[in-house]
Image (cartoon, rainbow over all chains, first blue to last red; front, side, top):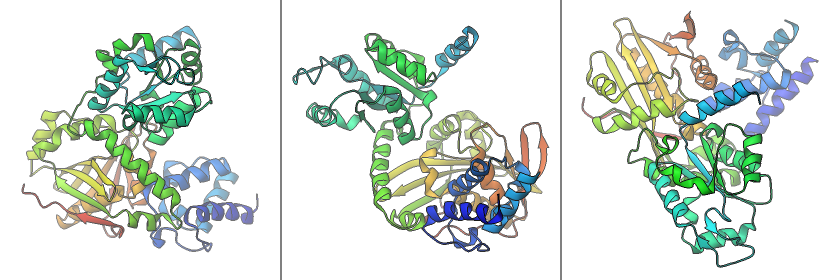
Length: 80
Length: 359
C-alpha cells in the first residue's frame, strides 16, 4: 500500500466526519474538533481499515495528531 | 450450541438485569390480530406490566409484523404509544428489529428481553441473538417477580428514564437534519454541564451508576451506598464528584461520577465514569480537566487508574489522548500519570458550572 493510498483513506475518513479538507500536517486536535468518541472512532477506523492492532503503547496523541503521523504509524505496523 | 455453552448462557441469563423489554403486538400486547380485526382488545396484564416496567426504569419497545401506520394509530388510540421507544413495526425478521432497537438505544443486547406468543418468532430471535432473554407471552406473569426485571436501584430518575430517552429521539432527529460539523450542532443544544460535590441525595444514583455503567467507566470499581457516604464526607482524603447535564430538549439527569483519592504527593482518579447516553456530547473530558485543575492548584501530581473490561477502551483513549502517560502496570491494573503542565481547554459549546455547594 502506498503512502498516498493510506493518506487518502485517512483524509477521507476525517473529512467525512467534519466536512473539512484537512492538510496532511494539520493538527486534528488543535482544530477543536475532537472528543473522546471521535478519538475512539479514529483509532477503531485505523485498526479495521488497515487490519492492524493499535497497542496500548501506540495510543499516543502524537501518533494520531496529523494525517502524516497516522500514516507513519500504519506504515510501521504494516512493516512490523 | 454445545450443552456446556448452553448451560453457561442459561446461568448468565438468570442473573441478567433487563433494561429493555421488546413486546410483540398481536396476541401479546393485545388479543387478536389487528389486520383482521380493528377492534382488538388489550391484554390487561401486558398493559400493567408495560407500566410497571416503566416505573422501574426498564424501557419498553415493540417488534411487530404489522402495518406500521395502522399499528401506531391503534397504540395512539389506546393511549399507549408514549410508552414505547423506537418501535419496529415492519416485516423484517424480529432479530433484526431487536438489534435495531438495541442500536438506537445504545444499550447491550444482553440486557434485552423479548416477549412474543409465537414460538417461531422466539426461536428466530433466540437463534440469531442468543444473549436476548426470550419469553412466551403466555408466561408474562413471571415478569412481576422475576429477578431479571428487578433493577437493583429504583430512584426518582428511574421513572424519568423513558422521558430522557424520548428527548434523545428528538435530539437525534435534529442532529440528523443538521448540516455542518458536530461541534456546531453541539453548540446549538445549549448544554449545561454541572459538576458538584456529591450530597446525600446523589448517593443512590451514584451507586447505581457504578453498577450500570460499563463502556464509559475507567475501572469498574463499585462502591456501596455506605462506602460512598463515608467517602463523600472524607473531605481531607477524597473528592467525590457528580455531574449533571441538561440541554434545550430536557435533562439527562446525573450522568457522571468521579472518585479521587487525595494523597500527599499524588491525587489518584480511582473512578471516572459517564453514562453512555452522553457518549456523543463531548463532555467526558470536562470532568477530567476539572480534576486536573484542582490537583494542580493543590500542588499534587495526578494519577489515574484504568482496568480494562473489554468494552471501556474509549476511556483509556480519553486518558492517553488527554496527556496521561502509563507509569505502572500490575496485572490488569494500569496506572497513568499526568504532569499537569498542559491541561486541555474546556469545550466552548457547553456552559460549565463548577461546584458551589458547601462541603
